[in-house]
Amino acid sequence: MKNVKDLRLLLNKVKRDVLGDKSYPIYLKQITYYCNPRREGVERYTNFSIPKKSGGERIISAPVAGLKSILYSLNTILQSIYEPSKYAMGFVIGRSVVDNAKAHIGQNYVYNIDLKDFFPSIDKSRVWKRLTLPPFNFSSDLADVIAGLCTMRVEDNDNVRYVLPQGAPTSPTLTNIICEKLDRQLGHLAKKHGLRYTRYADDITFSSMHYVYAADGDFIKNLHKIIEQNRFTINDKKTRLQTTKDRQEVTGIVLSNKLNVAREYTQELRMLLHIWEKYGYVSARESYMRHRKTSPIHRSRVGEPNIETVIMGKLQYLKMVKGDADEVYNKLITRFKNLISQSGNGTKYGIYKRLTYLQTMKIEEFENTLSAEVCYDPKAKVKLFFRCKDIDTPISASRNIDVTKLFDGGEESDKLWSKMRISLCDNGITQFYMLHKKLVSPKHTAEYKDSQVKLEQILSDIVNSDIFKSVLTDDVLFEECGEMVELEDLGDVILDNEGAKAIANLAETIDANVEVVKTHI
Image (tube, rainbow, N blue to C red; front, side, top):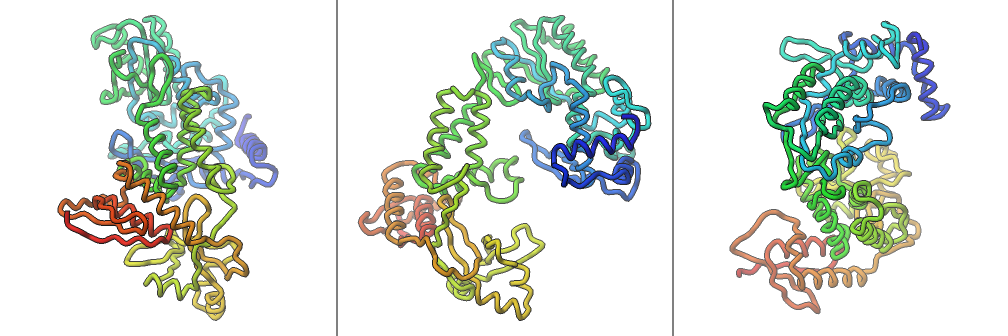
């Protein structure tokens, strides 16, 4: 590969191999348009922030669609040319956090350091220089084009720099390429002192059976010297030494005689499965949503989670860490599969074909019954919804409906409006509202008797156990009053305010007759 034209041909070949012959080609003018980070008036990256687990915010710079298309193919080319260092565990095909942690099992001391502002520490000139050296051996002009595509302009006070963005597909691969010298030097340092060494992106770990971590010792002095020579800075706030008396962790994985996840991780999985088994899918989702609202990481995410996908993801991570023969994993995955199989005729992870129409109304009847208004906002994230007492609830739309025509106010809109219906639907996992055309012959109709039996079972389980206190739907506490739930065949049951609200919400969800009345305790 000698010039930009050769680069374009190779990029397109890679793109066709991945996406097929029908993929849009990358043009030469597209490469020249995006390859100069100094060019003003060209939008190359969009910035947004996400919360850090340790507090504060992390700035993510995502390339625009045209540039992203180039960078994905370019990243594949770079990975095929370069063989990563044996010490690099992050963003390397076939390696993971598990491999990173496994290297440090059974050691008396685990020493972690973090490199500050890792991606912005690597500027365009370093990328350019490295691409002119083996195994790449690109010409100066071609290396300049590639380095330009992969870097972005940042302003630090009055200082303008061109650095690797955190969020570009090529940045992790390029950091491993740039850190080859760092890995080699730290690997030699570890060997000299009888230590083990790995690096996962900016997270560096040493471990040993003996102590060499004194601040004025040779190891620490040489470590700081090597980091500075490679133009990186240690984040002192994240430096820590873990002994066998501590819970040793490497990249989030607990070290003991074997790899493990944190106890809290398994406890959360058990809790979600237990609530789903005892009180149903909706309660499990609500429990997860409460945790999500208190977590800075989860709070930034948009939309409601699919709880079976959440649980499956957690189980897959547990399997990756502990192995598929682990007893805890096998017990939890069995419980999850049983829940999925009991939920109806489902496909993988609970996407169900069977749809039950619990209640169907004309739009006008729906609005009058709920004192609500059906709304459509094409600029909003949730475009179709109904508003009731200043609360917006999403409405799904059948695929054969053009919602835009329905709300354009024309003559055709009035005709379509009269044909529309809104149903409360159940897909075997959750309930939701759906806008659709008039049903000719509904195949699946919910029976009130089934709903009542289901509610009685829920109430019986809640009343006869202490766990109902975890099924909260409101964080407000009332110290001076409680509430009474009246249900035929169960008698009067006095609960605290939170328990009563939970039962009332469950009853409302499945359209059962439960009356909640206030009473003083």
